[in-house]
Image 1 (cartoon, rainbow, N blue to C red):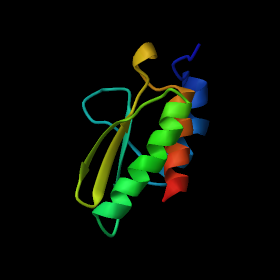
Image 2 (image 1 turned 135 degrees about the vertical axis):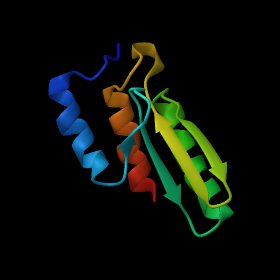
Image 3 (image 1 turned 90 degrees about the vertical axis):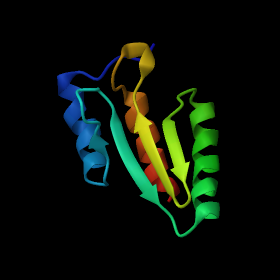
Image 4 (image 1 turned 120 degrees about the horizontal axis):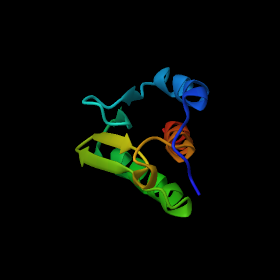
Length: 98
């Protein structure tokens, strides 16, 4: 079972993500977000397709939206009502897909 990130594990897992543009969601929600920008709609959609394959494989699905060449992603683990290692894992994978 997935567990909510402890105070001890948050830093080592999240700090590298913050360095690549991920941010905490405003308003007190325990979630991270990032907007990816691509040259055009086709490349944005291709990114979403590749990310969707990993999300399905790991059974961990993002909240996201696409407007033309931008994909905005929010990651949180609903089962634990906050961030888990799955969120960090999927964020790292998404960063690697661009």
